[in-house]
Image (cartoon, rainbow, N blue to C red; front, side, top):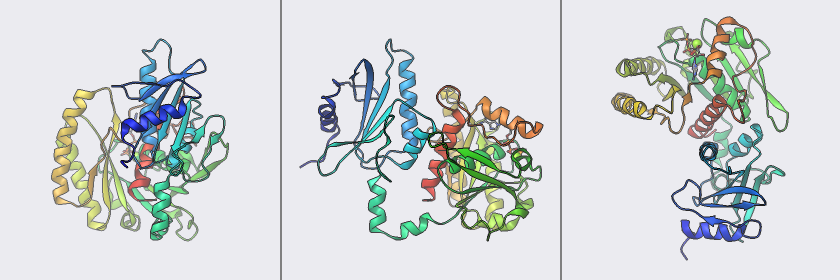
Length: 388
Ligand SMILES: Nc1ncnc2c1ncn2[C@@H]1O[C@H](COP(=O)(O)OP(=O)(O)OP(=O)(O)O)[C@@H](O)[C@H]1O
Ligand SMILES: [Mg+2]
């Protein structure tokens, strides 16, 4: 028999929910069904793909729902997602960390074809460990993957251009990886020692909002890093000195990949590209294996038309650089980018004034925080990229 085609899956989900709510099929919308749960309007999204859903896809749906709610007379109160392949841990962690109260997740039991509640506000996470079958399957089949997962990943945040967000990105990426449960060390290689000054000896304690328990992300100078003492560290994020030669070679040699921040600035995409090329050239001279991820910072998603023009120019430049050097990738900003936000702007200001301290710009405005969402997506992207 043919495997659940999108339409029949949607229909069987509608039937499965029909006891508790009256779902109505919709077309040409970002969701598949809508209905009433008591007095509340709900939307249901069905995903037939067999791979587990990631947090970045969840965030997209939450954005869609708040956009839609701006124009609905009676706003949707709940979002129900049914995903055949289940959900990655990052999805549960994201919901817990944001205390999001209006999302219900379901996966489908393979044998009985019944819906299984994977997450609800009332009961929290209902699936013991990884709901994500895919990963359990591959783990069972190929043991080496586990070994890979325990390896440490070294990340350099580097560009020879000043002021494009190296410090901002290193600190908040390290914060996101800490929230995701990886033991993370942030290494300050910049002689200005902004990070060390701002965050201080005690590091940053980042709390999981739901459990109230957290993890400490430590911040160290190059000289304080002790390979032996920090065996449990799974991710090292280096805020590099813009002059590559001033960064200790021992660190540069270890980079598995570099994140190169760039802005989509109309003045000088070509200039930016030559900065990227010089950056890669400098790292390659010391490190043959590192890959390069170009990340757009200070992104303004509302500037659709302008972004497309600049992005096409940038893509052409990155393609050209990719023909010279291996392992160069531009991260599509619709997938992951760091948006411009006042929280990050003021956080950066504090690195100069030295006030505040010991906090990342993850505080929420309303239900969510733009920087926290963006860096969580980046953390998820990185973890997938290197199979952490
Ligand atoms: N996404 C963003 N939204 C708003 N402001 C940002 C963003 N990213 C960076 N900034 C601001 O831009 C300024 C420069 O950022 P940052 O210090 O991280 O750059 P840098 O590359 O580390 O600079 P340097 O070369 O001096 O080390 C800071 O004031 C910071 O707050
Ligand atoms: Mg800096």
